[in-house]
Every structure is written in C-alpha cells, then in structure tokens.
Image (cartoon, rainbow, N blue to C red; front, side, top):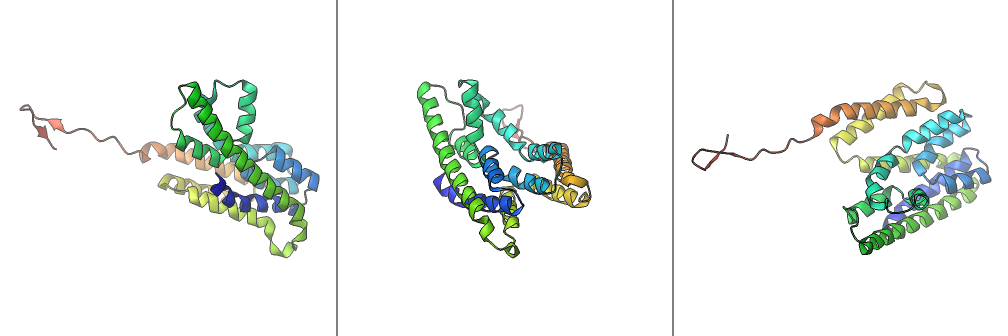
Length: 236
C-alpha cells in the first residue's frame, strides 16, 4: 500500500487545491476532506457547490459517483459480519478503492478461524491507515498552499485530470471502455441540463447500457466433448 500511496498523493494534493480554488473557505475544505474522504465524490461536488446547486443535487451526484462502494460493501459483508455494527461503520469509512482491491486480491475468501480473522484485519488496517495518512496529509497541504498558486496555472482542473487518468487505467475490458465512452458522450450531449445533472444522467445511461449488454459479453462455458457409444470421444 505504501507504494500505491505515492501515486495517490498527487491526486489528493490536487483535490485539496481544487477545493480552495473553487471558492471554498479553509474550514469548509478541511471538513470536506476529513469527513467525505472520497476524491471522486469531492471533485464531482466541488463545482456544484461553487455554482450554488441545491443540496439534493449535490448529494445525488456524490451518491451516483460512489455507487461502487455499495458493491464493495456487499463483497466484504461475509468477511466482517463477525464485527459489531459500530466497528463495521468506521471500517467502511477508512476502506478505499485501492485497499479494497489489494485486500480481496490477498484474501480471495473470508477467514474461517480466529487466527485468519486477525491476519485479515491486520492486513486491511495496515493498508487503510497508510492510505488515509497519505491522502489526508497531501490533501491538507493542497488546501493550505493552494491559494499560493496563480489562478492562471489552472490547478483546479488538475484533480479532474488525475481522476481521468485513474479511470482510463481501470478500463481494462471492452465493456468498461464502452461504459466510459457512453457516459462521456451522454454527459456532453446533456451538458445543458442545469446544476450539472448531466453527470447523474450520464451515469444512469451508462449503467443501463452495460446491464443490457453484460449477458452478451460473457463467454459461454466450454462444453466437454461428447463420447461415442464405443467409449471414445466425438469431436463435432
């Protein structure tokens, strides 16, 4: 996780810069980075806050952007249902995209013994703490030094570029590439919708399109060769 955090620091720094460059006060920016702790949701909500959008629009946008965490939580349910509800709640706050991916890659199946449970918790918390410290340190640095950068540098857009680079790296299948193209095209086509609701609409269009196409993207299981009456195999 320490190696991955190096790449995340650039994203978190630019997210901090984007918050203060959008007109948020230092107090608002600090509270947002500590309480929200989700770069993609922050970058989606910042221009809406700056534009004075209604609260329900901001919340709906952040909800759609962070829908992936619903999938993460469903997957992790069997791993951590032995914990009390309160511990699961703050574990969910600290667990990010990268720590989830590294954890599930290291432990494909939930623990069966107490020793395995302790090992999985130790691994996850090691990644969570490293990730949280790296993100918050650089995000706070971006908040407090952001005003020192000239506006002509356009650093408020750098966080968006960092997020775009991360999204492109995740487009590892044809269906994911298709969903990204559909979402981008829909967002541009509906740009005139007020309060940046084109973002929410584009997500809904992309999700619906992928749900329709996902059954066709699966490779059908290969059938075993049929046997002839004599006991041999018949290859049709």
